[in-house]
Image 1: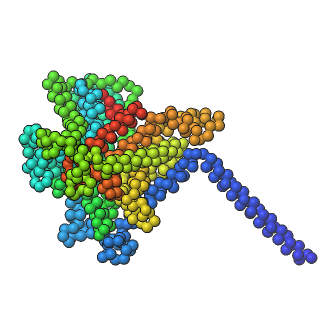
Image 2: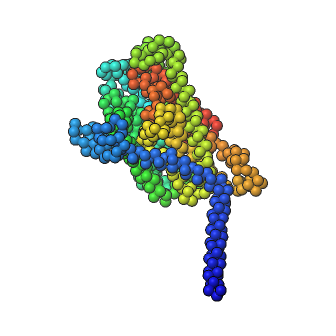
Image 3: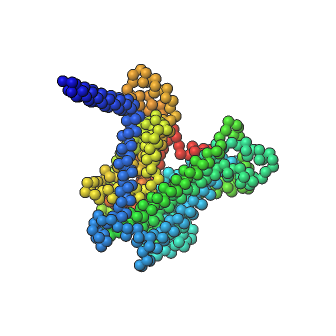
Length: 626
């Protein structure tokens, strides 16, 4: 009996320990459960967790998948080994294949052309955009309101519109083959320009520079407008020359904006596809984006195309990271103070003022208004550049106008064109709805949990698609659509909607975040106290207050999507959306119909932009003002 007591006591102790452990486990589990309930009781936390998962699936995993496909053997590349096996052959051939000078022609020459084209575009955009920004903010230039309104048109319009206008204006009968058509310049003056001014490197670089000049104008002009004018006033009192003030005071202050402009324009230009496609190919110019599409379109060289897509993506990300570093490191530049911002404007002089005014007005009108006139006229001319051959044939005929394109009847009767136009509206509307709504939700979540790791993760990943060149981003989803699981997406409008929504999400998320950060927490807290549910707080309280910013978050992706070609060119057929139809008609030199389609797109984009201004009260030209 005495021997069994310790045993029973041990058993009891063991049972008590087990019970205690179970209670502790239950207590720990209960605490975790309560913590989770408390965490997910806040809508902002639910939103951030959901979008962290969605963005990981739609942005991060596809990026990894792209990298994986650069070292994988694909169907059509069986000469390299078994399909699906790993290989470094794609990278080796792009960087070091000497046979037939392959690496030079496939990578190094296109890289050189792309970089040089981007450098020239940067110089042009900064000189023109920065110069006009200075005239409007620092001189007695008289036509400020007109220039502020009109100068931004080339940036609102698609970049390839400037390229098409350049071709319409400078093409001439001195060119070879089917391109030997009379343009506006030859028709009006008889001047025949050399071929390298119509097609090739210089036209591409100049058109990109003109397209991004308003971008430089907005960034640099915004800094000039808001900077403390007392610095310049003090230098003027000390008898410093205008050149010295500009060099020693103004330039250092606007340097962050200047560097941002250079880097952003460079990153956009080096990955440009549409302008080289319209003007470069006819002049024998090959760029990284053109070569990438050529390789990806060939089953035997897909892997090498994916390598170029990766290189282009890394190139742009590195450039934009440098921009982020530069702007962050220059935060000590205070340009807006509580002091007077009145500045004595530079007088352009009796001779200089009319000359400079005339030149600037001519430039702005030439690249903002004349292109629309050009597209309209070219669509009505039987013989390009010959205004005596005016006809409505290409708008009204039911006959086939081009033997290479089936059903290429007149624009008004062309079912393919109007079906593609409706598809573009549907695509743009769907992308705007998805991107805009997600942008508002991401903005709400990041604003409420500002500074947290999860909020920073969601905010940064949502912005990541902006850093990826459009064609590289499209390549990622093209690869995914080739897989058996997602094969149903290949070539479908649904794939375009997904790609467009994710690509244009940065616009909406930044707009939504900025709008939410402007709202005081007390506004929502008052609604919480009286028991208003979250969805009602969003629709009845927060949305009405920041309606302008939120609506712009919907309409900006809509406008961008309507004019987009680079993002969708790899993913769709030639008749799915209007920009793809335009490229197809341009490809087969059906000048009249391609100009008519271009006119339809530009008028639509400008009308939508006007709608943005009317609904939101915001305008892109308000960055500088007049």
